[in-house]
Length: 639
Ligand code: NI
Image: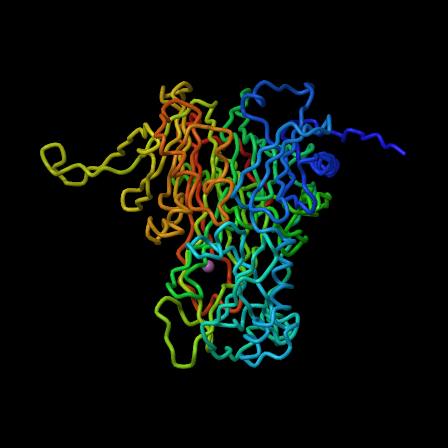
């Protein structure tokens, strides 16, 4: 019997979300390739995004050429293979082996690590030394191991497994760390390398439950708050194209970056004005500041080593999102290459955001108020203990904002009674949380009124006292063009209101000035505290500066490179070593933002959301306030 492969139905746009059929076709083509060895796993099957040149050349109605990227991890080898598949033809068009590179941690291999620990006699003995009898109640978390020159790392993919004990399966998984034990598991060869036991520490006494049954009586003083849009939401959705007010945006989804915004465009009367060609969070690292053997190695790259998209939640109405919601389902691939639907992966809705502008004319008596509203496009990833919500906001006045919301459970340590750790804060009896940072890298491919842009650093300059400044009050903005990649490695400075302006010299506003968008650090945001010459300092080099600017290159996709797992470095520091010109060219802006987390008692047993992010604001992009034509909200206000 022969079967004829039917080419999958193709989305109507080159950036359309990958379909289950496309995943199936691409995986089948790769698995049928004789170079794909027995037992290989597919780390991802995703859309190979067309280059900007290809997108610019494409018009609606043209054929849509779809290419899938498949990352193959051969069994028993320390290598990854990057394959490209022409989806319509069902053929492999490119096959590149990267010897010695490692994929992100695979779910299949992580499950083997968990099972392997349980079956290991040394591991069992280490648990029994701590009085743990029911080993089924031990939660085993495989972690990316980092790069520390340990012989275990050499030529292998490894995980470091840490453990916690529950009293019951629905207990807080992190309240009782099995302090002292780290198991080194060989992911490549599926065997235990070492169960390191640094000594027994007594279990923290509390369960740390955050379940409602353990917090009775629950509050009764909040009445229902509902968001009602009787005429429906103001956005329209065709495929993955969203239109809302003057904005349009194409929604994408990537296994590592999660939500991606493509072709963010403002329709300014009769003109389509591009602002961002592509925007996403490409990497995120959590370096821990405790120098001890149990926590000092922790510096997970949650995008590159785990995958924010791979870890994305299926969102549920009324809890994760509120109001008139549109959900996007996305298609993902199992490591066997089978498609599955992640339902409700992306949530989109509108939010009232207080007032946008207002003036009460005390003489004339008029009182004009316009309400602000934003379109929210979001997803939430659960990476082990932590939750990260990523919320992109488009506003009526041209603002674009990203807010990352950090919640979930901190990764704690058990502390012996009477001890006071130096590099961790006590958060509950016998329990402390090591100091750490969360550092995100947003990749912002600005095309402000088109691709050739330049970037200026703008900050307040204080004028020295003198004849021109008799009142010693003078200050003015100083704009410095950042001409090269090395000049564009910059850090925030709240004292001078430092921001960065992405300028198109070829497009002018009515005052004759070049149009621009401004990248504003809206919240105090750190850079990495670890030494630049530390392991994580080299591997997460992107986090050493808040700002980086590169000329667009299609293969420069993620801030720490494609293979951060057990890497020695890569990404932005390597690319920018060429010190390319970034003047009046197609620039990509990379912004590092995040928090330094000195954990509070209030962050236990589950963390109230902590916020971080940034704002992109029009700066002479418009000729005046672009929201003058908003209608007053007649009838909607109560006197
Ligand atoms: Ni934290």
